[in-house]
Length: 516
Ligand code: AHR
Image 1 (cartoon, helix red, strand yellow):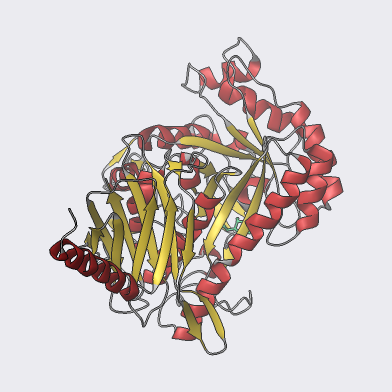
Image 2 (cartoon, helix red, strand yellow):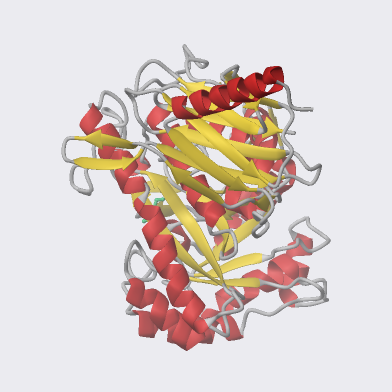
């Protein structure tokens, strides 16, 4: 029955809904009723190259080290990586891959030859970490191996034999060599790349020449037993769309994925990239602007791939991405050592939000790199270890691995800097196997808080809980002496109101929410 009292209550309820809606300056629509593709766990892949202390010191300390280790692989790093559920690790490079001869890295360590790592600091590489050690590392952290083969300076036979060595169970020369080196059963190797950056350090090839080489080398990469290779072609660096076009035309039917490499450089100038810490707002802004260029790169590559492959059979693997700054003062410039701040965390989250939105085509990505190099998860110094802000984003976002993407649309304020601007709010969402919806929001604006209203269409939201990653300073970072300066904290700024999710986003923050 309608009485003056119920009318008044309805008016008050409407007024309260309108007034709370008007407090929000950003609206995010999550289409929970229109699920997209599964977010392949491999989107959370990583990259570990023989570069600086990426392997030696960072992962491999040797069996005789005082640093606690299992068969030479440091236990603190393994434990930290296991917590991230790292799905896949790309190895041994990078540029190093195209000068790596895998037979140098098998057999008794005392017999392994030393080489010069010409790409990275011209240091001596003693090959003590080779195929067996890498596979052991993958098994210890629970990740799949992704091997990058040497197309630039290796032979067809060498690449072919590596696959036989790793994956054949036959009584064949390479399988028997593996047995003689202590491993009876073959490993499972799904992901195999034919060369790295073949347009650059991998051989300065034209796309046409590369495709001919891909065809030749790929012909001799066999599937042994039930091991089926996912064959990955070298794709473009940055916006070289012609490279992708040629690959799709010439080897679109032979490859299973094509890679894309894109680094975020604050200044956009490889000669003076910008510092990892102590930067001003201008470099905060340009870093984030440069990183969201990933959206354009991925979209344009997807269009090219869609035109040739409407079934989306071929994956786009962004198998190198992340920030690249000037090296830390006083360090070997060839080791690519850089600090990692709250800005890197925002970069990681923005990239994941982009990758999720393209999860129908982007089925693997590998941040560069895992330990001690570029935008790493973990820094080590002797027996000390410290987790970076980027690590915490991988940890906060791991719930999205294998979940179903829920399309998001963001209407919201811009973050203006001078005469340039980028969207202040970025969002992503997915539904996990247990039905929970995970919504992640980023506020890229270092100065302004924003209230975000999320319309969860098709979902009857009842409760929300979450965590936040933020800090007082744009370049807040963790050190061995202060390892917890930037770490996730419980978040009380989200509530469900009238079925909508209302979130108060502090400046320069990442919020990870679970909605049920
Ligand atoms: O990640 C560092 C280097 O960047 C890789 O070796 C190479 O592939 C890229 O140019």
